Amino acid sequence: MDLTFFITAFTLFYIWHIMGVTIGYHRLLSHRSFRCPKLVEYFWVVGGYLAFEGSPIWWATIHRAHHRYTDEPLDPHSPRDGWLRAYYGWIFGAGYPDHICPQEQAKDLVSDPLYQFLEQNGRWHRAHILAVLLGIAFRLALLLCFGWTIALASLLAGVLVQQVPLLLNVVCHMPKLGYKNYATNEDSVNVWWVALLTAGEGWHNNHHAFPGSARSGFRRLEIDPSWLMIRFMKLFGLVSWLREETIASTFKTNETPIASRAQ
Image (tube, rainbow, N blue to C red; front, side, top):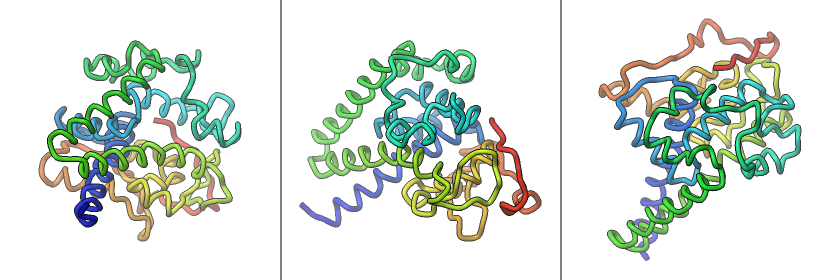
């Protein structure tokens, strides 16, 4: 195996899959922080889906509930309920809890026929199994068309990316592991190495202060590759509108409380 070729393929797949989560699932579907043509939306969402992230409707609905109830008893995955539950325990429910309803909290997504199919009528187990099967089928297609090096690079990138948001749910809500730019009324913190793994999502305290912003890295050294990609797409007309908070005028240190703003 050509190691350089494998590393290059792995890196490219990792970028597509992680930005599929950060740009597609998170900043676009969950927070509607920018607008783009449907083909662009599907390009990023499929990248996230093939990282075994599950139904886009399920993901966005759960994430919106997380912002609505951050670190409260109804939060789907707060580390206050134990890090194992925050990491993966919340995934294995049979269906949506009573306080979480995609027809109410994700009305903008439930009418999309592709997302409806991937949602499997809200039956989590079926939707998760479908995500795994389609993820494996994609790698088998790569194997047949391009060989095992490409297929393995994609599979490893997808499995790694699948773990990264789960890690973020834990690490970026443990105050001792990061820092706050904003004194939000929950436990979110910025963690630089999580931002590195997630293409900018690790600036999590910033995100909880301004959840509707397409930009998460605010300070000079808070590099946000997902934001740079969104700006790059806008430059070429692939993004028609985006929401960026006026950080220069609203930035506060953690000495000044600021309420966490839900979408």
